[in-house]
Image (cartoon, rainbow, N blue to C red; front, side, top):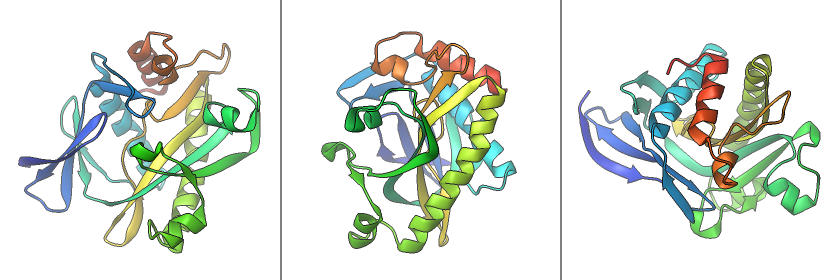
Length: 236
């Protein structure tokens, strides 16, 4: 597989073309950002840990019947994936109240949400990723009604699969975001799943084991990521 020109550089990952027009390479960098890029640092080993964590989760989901863009783990910080036509929509599921939900609704952090709350956000940094609904998505052409329905179904299936995975390892999957794209007309999971894009708490102590450690200046960010990886069996 020949790695070619950089196609896109995000806040923490870069995308490279390959000699196969249907495949691209995701490169996980050590860059870490929060608050729409207002807080940026380099954290040693972060790219490697997130890459291997993501590969484990994608394989786990594939084994459970979820279609993903994952193809192969190439190196400590690179993965080969299908080239998707990404939809600029983030699908968020909240099993416990945390983060922006608490700020918006004044609810107590940690409150169990039954049923889980599902929210859509527009992936747009300059606008600070505003919350949107299905009418916005269809009206502005960000995705079809059929694609929206497929994203919701898959997101809730993933919630069942991963909530159990983390529960069995003594953790609570508080909330997470997913991004989807089209590949040959099918809606499949893209981007990544790592502690950068979810909240994970130790079930017994409530210790935060995710990117909130960076957002809130708690320290031990990569150590927390590695602890989560170790608990669920990610080979680092």
